[in-house]
Length: 305
Ligand SMILES: Cc1cc2nc3c(=O)[nH]c(=O)nc-3n(C[C@H](O)[C@H](O)[C@H](O)COP(=O)(O)OP(=O)(O)OC[C@H]3O[C@@H](n4cnc5c(N)ncnc54)[C@H](O)[C@@H]3O)c2cc1C
Image 1 (cartoon, rainbow, N blue to C red):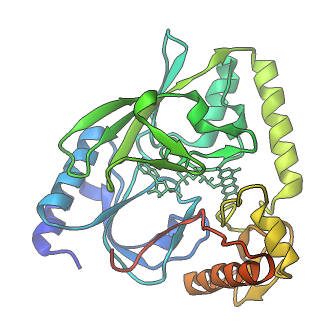
Image 2 (cartoon, rainbow, N blue to C red):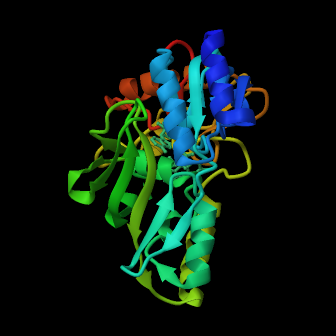
């Protein structure tokens, strides 16, 4: 639990933008998770900095959440402060062919902005739910395309909230579904993303095409976190899980999707423990049947740091 002094400092800095004992099940797409000691939703960069500074001064751990579409929150209480960036939603077109996009801008806000102005290059993200901060931290993408291809620069604030840096593309180490090299606890504030001039009609047509192909292949009507595992080199996690006989396998309210075996769906009332157990079952079964170690893509938060 966080101290009374820390609680007061957070309340003074954030007003009603901090809540205590806030259930993380409300902030993650899997709809599971216990409470966070504190849940902060800073509305400005200054509030982000102040939140981080308070955490550092009171030695409280913090973690960052975008829109929670790739996050599994454990059933145990999250000890510390969960900082959600969804209120930083600035989005501006610059004369140099780039967009300045704040971390809390959502995939749909960005897609609609690009459709409206006829800007191409980011259509591939239209069906990747989340915020730009989450996209960057995960190097989100679809087969053949990743966000890293359009990143010119990222603006990051240090874990103590003291220093803001603008990191050019060359200083960033993107990997498959990861951005490496940032100090743990750093927070991405914004990014410069490159776009090119097209037309509203052309951008909308590409968005519609991508969304339609996704509808057919993924279970989009039930809570999930998208792909649970990264694809191993040269293969697909979903294919391996299906071949191991686990497609449709259920544990309590959690199910290895019968539509796409690399998705775990919350069919109603699932717990994080059930989802974790299915993750482990899939790893064990694929190791036994194919000799492949599946690595989770989903990020786990909660419990003791
Ligand atoms: C139905 C469905 C389909 C999906 N399809 C795809 C797909 O095709 N391709 C794909 O790549 N992903 C896919 N995903 C996963 C998810 O959409 C992406 O990982 C997305 O980038 C998550 O964004 P988020 O804001 O929700 O991140 P969160 O889940 O909130 O966070 C993910 C990670 O990013 C970190 N993070 C978030 N914001 C910041 C920030 N500002 N600063 C520092 N770190 C931050 C968090 O700490 C965490 O480690 C899918 C998910 C669902 C539910």
